[in-house]
Length: 302
Ligand SMILES: Nc1nc2c(ncn2[C@@H]2O[C@H](COP(=O)(O)OP(=O)(O)OP(=O)(O)O)[C@@H](O)[C@H]2O)c(=O)[nH]1
Ligand SMILES: [Mg+2]
Ligand SMILES: [Zn+2]
Image (cartoon, rainbow, N blue to C red; front, side, top):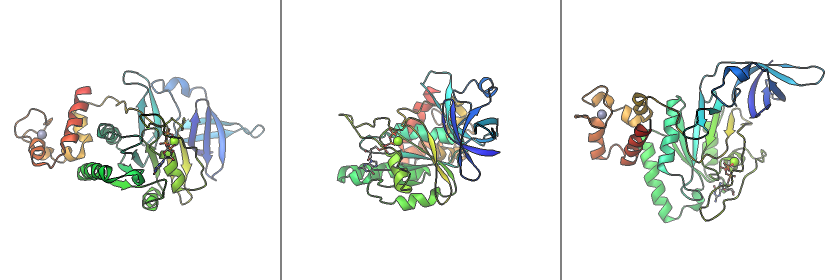
């Protein structure tokens, strides 16, 4: 039998079978040893082969099909083991909030670099636009402009009021989509707005810092009525970047990558080299200073 892993909480794995029914499964012992570098040998989005015990109804996963892609997160910046957030993704969406809680451009850039690094197309979803007063509207316009110029599609929605939710919903159809972002950004609320009836638990925004309460504790894939899936994930504080080669990092900033052919040196790192097209574009405002600073900071860390 074939299935799709939609939830995995340690030893308990939920697999969606081809007829849409759910099957509780365990993993055959051998997998635990093979993939020691990840804390989870089976990930959400994995396509698996399973056997179901006719008598007890227990499922046993016997094979994990090769992953087309996956997105990883490290427990901490220094930790050696990493956790696969989800596999076989068609698209990753970062749910961004400018208030309650605030998402920084540095965080957005690290998310985008991670997605680019794993060859997963990414977009930004500005949520809670119902909270935008004149000042936040200005900030929003500026930030959205930066990312659209870099080549990323942006959406502006309110999960609370339902604003523009249909527009977002239409691009999710038929695909496996990941929703990521800080705790309290409204990932779960937005999925509820996209598909009423799922009744995913959402949390309060609390304290002076107006942060989320880490309401979603395990990632879970939700099937959409019109086809496709959304993976709801627990809020992340930081995107601990997986080690990328320095030369890979400019590939992860598409607006800089597009300029490389115009740099004097074909291996230009856009830092100290003469005749650098990115530096010229920076001076003309064609490449964003914020994005360039993120690039330097990520280059420094790797
Ligand atoms: N004003 C406003 N509040 C919203 C909106 N979307 C979500 N919220 C509120 O934000 C809070 C957090 O929403 P959640 O959906 O639990 O956030 P989350 O991103 O899933 O958070 P974690 O599961 O902790 O990672 C809830 O109180 C929601 O009602 C919105 O568009 N506008
Ligand atoms: Mg949640
Ligand atoms: Zn250059």
